[in-house]
Image: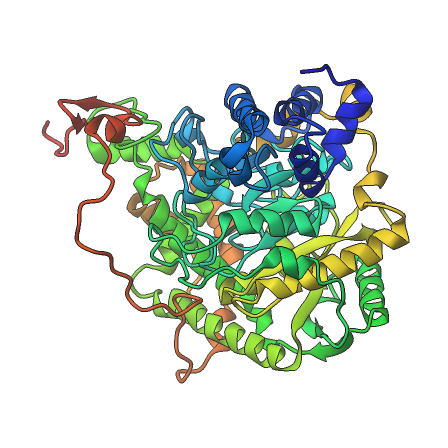
Length: 536
Length: 98
């Protein structure tokens, strides 16, 4: 293998997964070279006090071994080489909520520190079947509970656009890794926006597929009726390619849809939106949305209109209750799902300092020490919402709101093929800014939550930079359940219109990270996170 | 709907098996009161005629054939346990007297 010069390596890490796949297939570059270039990038920008901190674990040895395998199969040629998946040798990062053999899985929590899963998640198995080298596990808010990745027990991830700002959450690690060119692709999970909102604030693409269309087997459950694994990438086509690797029925997940997966890559390549009805959701823009977010949103509408789409306005009046319903359903399900972390079967066990040493007291001490504040808040809130006397008023009412939100979507999709809104009401806020105000933090999810309540798919793509702060704005597209293909069709067209306007990908406008990481004076992480008990 | 107070939080923390200091209870009670207040409107949103949705995409019961599939060995199952002995999870005493 020839040594890559710096310029070649820079070209590799900035390439899309589709481009890398093409170069690998043509033999222009080896999988080891591609994987090594990304590992080098991780080494250059991820670590240290000023690093991005997107990765909790880097899987160097295994990733290079998988890459070498791909190279030797390709070099040998013949039937085995023919059978190689299109993305074979294209590396990927995996959110650390998804279990993997051979690497630790922490869920961003102290309670699972050092734990190794004895099995692979179905999506990980599918990455292995496609021979995609797994670069490592990415940072997240503890058990995916948060919108800023500041609730990770292993310190926050920093936004590659501005290291003093949040990368979104809970999948801030996956989004930041992709935005920082540490990985061309990543997996995320989205319960209330944890793929889409980080995508929005880091200038990347993130997709929450239709509920049940990607197996949840091996994703540590937060809220089982809302959780969904999905792709994270820099281009719409790349997300479609990855979605096709991970999607489709899985008998190991009883909520997995039996439907065959549509050709999403083909959808991303249609290249026109003529005659499509695109609905603006009245309730998901305007008041409460940052001016720069509104401006970029309106600009995208104009571009779509110019491309022949019909823009219509729809109203979803019950979305006003969606956030409240979400913050009852999600904690209820989470309080039940997290009961298994009790110091018996896996992870941490903490013994109380004084007698008696009963199992109940050991559980109390273990969960007190192992869980962070946000997880405790949600467990208590969920226990409250499910308790006798409150169940009907809280959990029961929230489930009815879910029906109302679904009906709003049905009515909206009768008038529009695809719905559109800003992904998040603001651009990335400063690290520490909202840590003391859980409710303000929850409001970040206001535009993304309805899709989870109704199970419909959503995609966020970069819509440009806000005028007032120069930070990325996300545009969200929503489609009816099982119509994920429409997101890719419209998303790819909007992306190409926007990139034509910008003269290239949005991330070309991001600051040079190596310089930032090495020279910029950043407030030490510890002083920012002391209020929520996080530590390294 | 009633507001949530410190005693409620202490009771809930016991139910949820999370030990909390007095200081933690104070802070948590204040934060949760704000959150509960903000979600109150949910109970007024839907009338009695609206059915509840527990699952976003309707699916009927999913069964599989009653055959032995992949199983973990005892060693694999116990590999992440904080304590194990004789192929079993080892736990502290269940009863106070122990």
